[in-house]
Length: 210
Image (cartoon, rainbow, N blue to C red):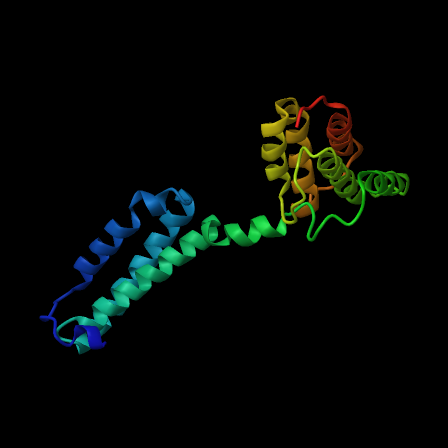
């Protein structure tokens, strides 16, 4: 409240507050984050702001309290929109979707053997994880990729394709399968596992110059 002590009085009524809030929330920055969600939120928030400002301006002739509350509410709405759109969660999500949580713990052959045991037991979800890790480990052992913890499946595609463009086609569907099954709770299936096997085979046989 200290910031308002030396400013001239600002009168704000319900209609003006609602209009300004609507104009602010209708900007493309918020609209692009999810139209249906924002449209529903705007209506509810404006009704709430209008009712709240009616009571605030009644007890605060210069409108300072109402204006401060309006700004606070707008900031809150923006934060909620950005959070729901995933903007504020990007860093955490990318980090959590790493192929290896820490440094690579096994060789490509070891990951491959593990995947085969998991397939034999019918656990295709775990087999997909292990076989894609075998693929990435293979590319690392062949020096197509550098040793780096925290790399996501999609970063594997981008990094490997810069060195060996021929790998992009088999790696892209495998990266999608890995991410959807391991982090998206999609079921592992023989068909999805086959896509990862194809990428691993390509990683072993592709001719690359590094």
